[in-house]
Length: 100
Image (cartoon, rainbow, N blue to C red):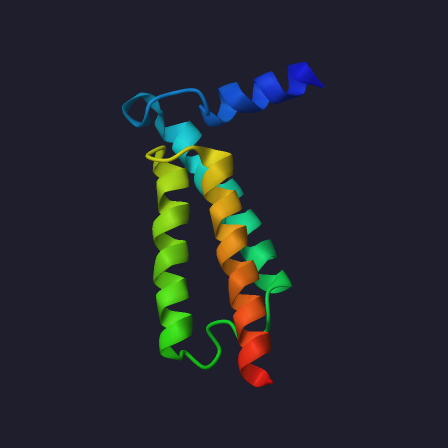
């Protein structure tokens, strides 16, 4: 299992500074971030970005900013995806509260 995680670290360049990430690593990061973000958004409420309220637009901007940092290496990869999940969870919670 450690060998697999080490391979993922090397392939995605997770231990590298942002200026050390090559084109292939950034492309793979973009693909992983896209897939994970799509899965997270699909698990979130269907309303997300559907009505484009101010709440939804702000969330979209924040998510875009956070995941872009994961792709470019300006923020740690997994914590950035975790922060995205937290924001989507908060959106789910607050939209549920607002409906009641």
